[in-house]
Length: 389
Image (cartoon, rainbow, N blue to C red):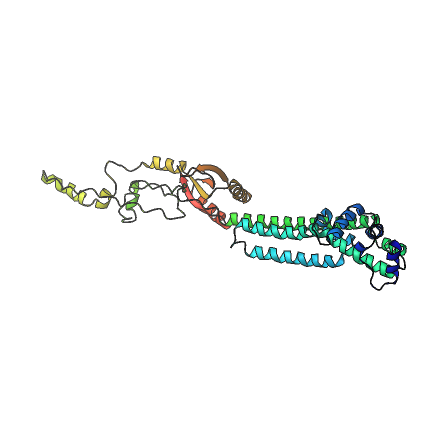
């Protein structure tokens, strides 16, 4: 039967199928076409495929993990072109998912992306043996048709088989390509990280992180001494001793204070003697606004106490309240680099959160505080004046 198969292969126009040949001839042809690399494994898979006559799925680890290198090693040029087209489809699929990232939930996007990646890697792993089987069958058919004997066909197949030298240079080329790809990917991710850090620092510098309504607000400027509220109404009539030294100029207008309730006017006492006419005349010259501008039971602060209170007042410029300590430290560093005396303190919000307050100061005069606030605003940060007694 072996001699008849050789005679048929030598003289027939169409060579017989490999599975129709004797087992010894088909096994020798398969082994010669495969070469010494994983020959036993492929022979067992080919025997199963020849017995069933169908393309049954198996599992080929090399085809799944190193698909491109494996196809180059086995000279599977047509499947390699199809695999490249599949990779292009995967890239397009990922681009579509990126465009739909706001419309679909994150678990759905992750599942669809993982499905595409598994298809690209799982299909070659499941049907890698089938691809090699068909490739080897075509090589055997061409060798049997072009050789006068099976021995010469085997020698022809051995010339094109996979050798250990070919395996070594394909592995080296694949390792070099993987190293270059990983290096380029790491450099690209590093650039993306630096760009994201720069954007985060810029956003933190331009607009400090907002806080909720229940969080503490900056302290309002200290109010003037009693009697100063009447100064805008009648500046020419206010007594000099009734006003305290000038308060620091606030950067933002303070909240309006409730109007003072004037004391009820009491009728003047009846004159007791003609000598009181001069006293009544002097009383008539006293400005009535000064009498009602000060609440009952209060007296003007002595000049010495007002000067001591102004000297003890410390003025600060609030920069912002930060929920993230890292943002507070960055703002503090920027202020320090601009030679501004800044400090970080922890405050507790109404909802129990711990916030970091950054402010500049202290200053002893409103002009110093205003100058520092202008420098803070020039850095792109907020500036709110606050006085601490």
